Image (cartoon, rainbow over all chains, first blue to last red; front, side, top):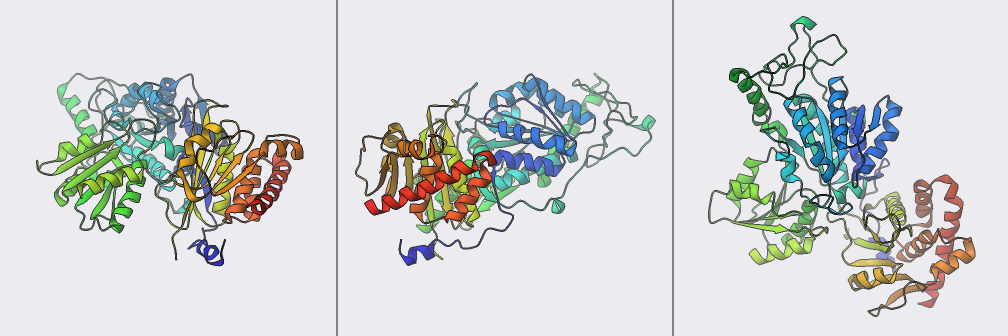
Length: 392
Length: 184
């Protein structure tokens, strides 16, 4: 190696002293611990196993509980129970387990129980390819449970972001009293990156509101203008009933349409009145773009690389990346559709995200290209670049 | 400052310890202050089946985390070599175990061809640390990472009871790289 080359290989900036080599799944576990998780119930499944593995070691050290149950159904049910007893509770799984959990996830949303479900996606359908990536659960994360259940779903694209969005998932679940899903790509779950995590003392942690009224006045589901009503825990002297049936403000089953309407409206309002708080997007080189790539998770990393290369070649292209995929970033996507001539949606499924863009497309002349791949490999920058060059 | 991106692919079959080697390489690169990503691809089996890990080292943000055209390729089975050799850069370096890889489907300018498995058994009494021998050999030849940073990474990733043998394996890898240099 010549002198010149040696010099070239000096890093531009030295990594900070607290740099760690972390796996995506470990970052999720660390994020959960930073957010104050004290209960994990679940059943290990590739490619999410490391989340459970890490927490099984760390939770007992901080006084938390880790329980491995007989299956994912029991795992998700235990999470609901733990949360109602006051714990910050979570589970982690992959597609097959996520399918099994859907009934209980719907229950958690209906009964307004804060909890976090991590789904490290693998190829499906069914048991599919356990060790290969896929983004096949995007629509399941929204519509997996029957009924009009609300959905808050976050989707990181780097190891650091996996940490940040796990903290955020807990915060949103506590704030809005609902089950929040964190989707991860298999590649990210298993990938290691050199990262610096934030000082835990600088993090904003949200805890559920506690009732300030005497137990006899407590209503488990009270209409509150902006945020969900305070939540008592079992064992604190408050009496309340929890059911998956439509319920009144005390939690008892009801058939009265007036009371059902209040309940259903509250579930809906959590999302639509708080879009600004819930939706996060990243725009990357969108200035003067005539072509936009809309991508999330691992595909967004390929897209960034492709966009960089295309910009270098003088092609006006940018990337819009949702960090929150549900609620879908309708406003940002509509603006993108107005601003550019062509939108390319690369994803590791048969077009689940593209159909959302299609739904928002008003101008029949604007062009939408779906770039899909379902063979267990990820979409490369070259594949996206090829499409960008074709449409330019 | 020039941007640089170096791509490593360590490939072979499950059980050869390549993914651990990839993690150690990534850790060493991180110790040296580089940006780094390490990804892995393997089948559902614990042993056997094809296995690979990619390590990308850069002085800049790494967007796409997998290796596509390799600067360094370790191939420890014929299958892995056949599958990935065409994606080796023209000035890329190939490292193979001559016991396992017999045919090359393409001429390669820079090649280290050693019977790593035999030498490892002969010098260390077991074939297990062959992953560290091959890794250390290629790390030395890459000139990206210091011996100290690699040693630190081995100690950080592996449990203390196997430090000694793996440090020996590392030194053996360095020695073999010197021989390889002379051959070139």
